[in-house]
Length: 162
Image (cartoon, rainbow, N blue to C red; front, side, top):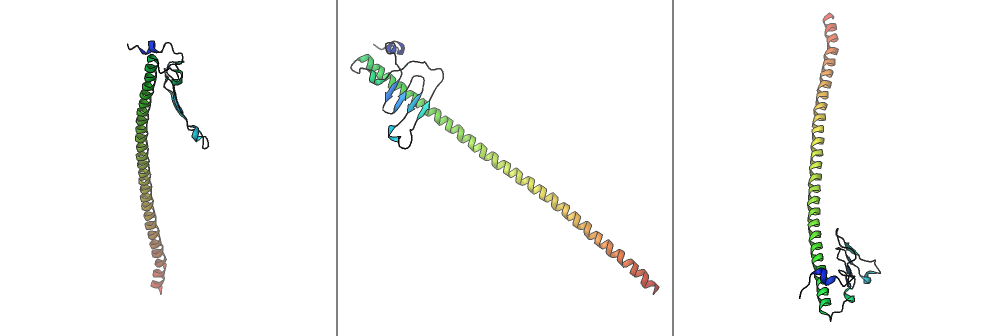
């Protein structure tokens, strides 16, 4: 006879916690994975938490007597719950990874657009300054020609009197 999760777990004060070598799982969605073999290089720890979790619902598989049918059912339920939460966590990580990729692509395209816009502004300023330089050069040439004509006029008048 299958019982609901609440009935099945009510006699176990530590329900929902599964301890496997190097791994911890709790009903609140928190998963901790650590490996003692990494002690020389530093502990590897992974934690994932969800809000709205029930507190104080912990069971260790080592606390269960697997010769008792209800304990076997509980162990299977804990492992299934752990598996489902790992799958949900991996799905969340995949979704978050995709969002990060999309934002990275957006940032790259935005940077390219900004750089292109700056290049266009610099080109526009260079064209404006080039036009101004040409105008000043034309004024300078006109001034030199006017000065040359003015210097020739007195020489022409003097030559008339000679």
